[in-house]
Amino acid sequence: MAGRLTTSGNENPAVLQAIVAGCAAALMLTGLVMIYSTGSIEAISLDWSPEKYFLNQLVFAVIGTGLALALWLFVPYRVWNTRLIYVGILIVWLCFIGVALTGEGILGARRWLDIGPFRFQPSEFAKIAFIMVTAYLVCRYQDGSLSLAKAAGGAALCVAAPLAMLLVTQSDLGTSVICVVGIGVALLFGGVRLRWLFGGLGVLLALGAVAILATPYRRARLFQMLGLMPSDAGDGAASYQLTQSLYTFADGGLLGVGLGNSKGKFQYLPEAETDFIFSIVGEELGFAGALVIIVLFLVILACALKIAASCPDPFGRMLAGGCAAMLVFQAFLNIACVIGIVPTTGKPLPFLSYGGSSLMSSLVVIGIILSVAKGSEAPDVHRERQQNLRVVSHGEPYVPPRSQCHAVDQGFSASAGYASGRSGAAASHGRYAAAARPSSSRRESFGVQRPYGRSRR
Image 1 (cartoon, rainbow, N blue to C red):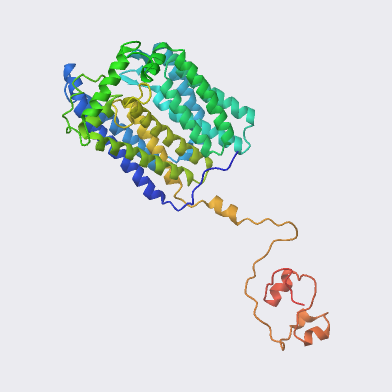
Image 2 (cartoon, rainbow, N blue to C red; image 1 turned 180 degrees about the vertical axis):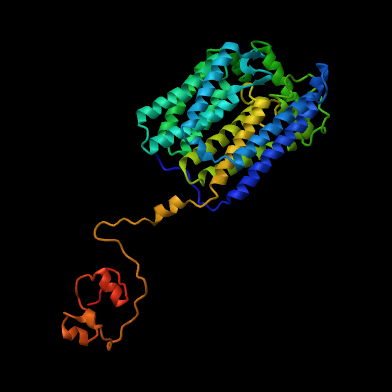
């Protein structure tokens, strides 16, 4: 393990909590406004109420905010640093198996699970569980509770195998990449050596290249983005969607066409209220509004990394750092897809895109980060005691005196009991006898407790 990331400790956790919570609230409120503006057209085309998308998202926002507040104020983050995390991984396995067997397919992807009247995407919450179990295994390896073989086996069973199943059964390369980035940052905060991280990154890049080139639609999207394939070849729907996204974003100019005045949302841009809502933000609010969204995500990342680096224990550092990196990386991945920097991945924009699973998982991540910050506010008594420890190589430790010894006049005469058995010359000159260390009873009778080994001769 290498030296971990730390800060000077001058950051005020309460201020960082307020900034993170404020930025998340601003993003969520912006998302609600944009969904009301964008989703109303889609709802009307389906003969639904114009407010349907907005009201659904509002319900998810209220539930997610309640979860975030509960995690922040009432659930210490250290509760996840127990074997309870294995229960979460078991639930992840069951959900992934359920998706593979009975999952609901939407737009060609089987990633949703129906439980009664509720439909959710398990991978959105599995990302958080992967960060938690990674931090738990690293901490158990560092304190000696697990050997390297057991920690590696746990990582393979609890992280690598579910991610492989996610990629194979759900064809979700985007979520797999997001999880890998979050886990990598968590390991960096945990003190894992950089050469191990770069070595693992090289292996994962090779596997990712194979996954892209071996899948026809992924390969077509990549070649179209690189200009190696005509736009009307391969996945024409993806090419049309990207073209409309660029047109929509460019129409906004610097200050936008005004809130609610988008043209792209009139079914020119597919999935405008979900994966490509950032294009509508750029059209209605302009480049300035889009830049504000980017800055809010960057502020969350900066504050969360400060929270992680100033956390007193490694589990909190890995948890906050990994969750923050995962959240913000997903945001920038979505933005990069919208403006054509990377191929379309189908991942939503946190806080802004329509979808209950994405919104609630994003708010849960914020609640976890705030919980770590709140846990860092209390004084670390264990660290203070550890810093006050002194190592004594031999002899007995220093015993502080009960009262300070003052200068003794030459005419001072020792008591009869203390001077008995000593030379008369030493007593007459008012000097302490160079005797062996006195017993505790003798020191108490004399009324002065002197440190050992400092007797004057």
